[in-house]
Length: 268
Image 1 (cartoon, helix red, strand yellow):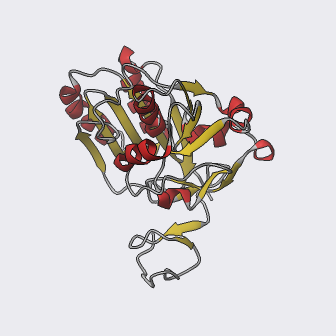
Image 2 (cartoon, rainbow, N blue to C red):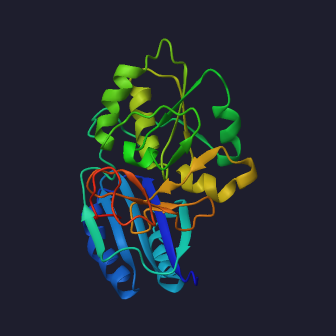
């Protein structure tokens, strides 16, 4: 299958006092480049997944990185045969990822970044508590073995789980991961504020890990949920073999016509 469409995912926590003024120029350059997807802007930074032909994506990324505030922003890229978004959205938000915890500020402090090549060694250590910072329906598709599943339905439920399940006096080393890195980065700021001293998070998230760690050496199991029409990615960052029931969020084989759990035909 021809994979001509580039999907670019990126974020950065950076002070953007002028974030409202960035919206219209981004709408213009994305629209003029045939790029669709979602870009979130807030005073704390930018968070986006966009898709389009290679030339259009490059035009948008060149525009963004010409601003020195975004010059070193990590961009994770994968490819597909069609644009997996229906339209372009550039939205102004209070947070670029909504934890709704005022004492979690990645602009002040974050946990220690762990590169994908060092991740396996870290999470294999017995004294490291591994937390999956994603939602339960995402965890169903795949995870790192031994990771604790908070069983949340939205990211803003995570602080409640952390408060109840972890204690800085007993859990000295905590590692976290998520899809692209943004959620565990913000959650690491929350844990540090709560008195935890050794907090680690996977740089670039699962997507960066799958790109840089060979399948033969990988500790990842299953597929990675993504928030677009592809639903999931395999270890090669290609569209996976599972679907999600949009009603009950159960994992469904892509070949199924209805959800075996609730009977719905509304499959993603």
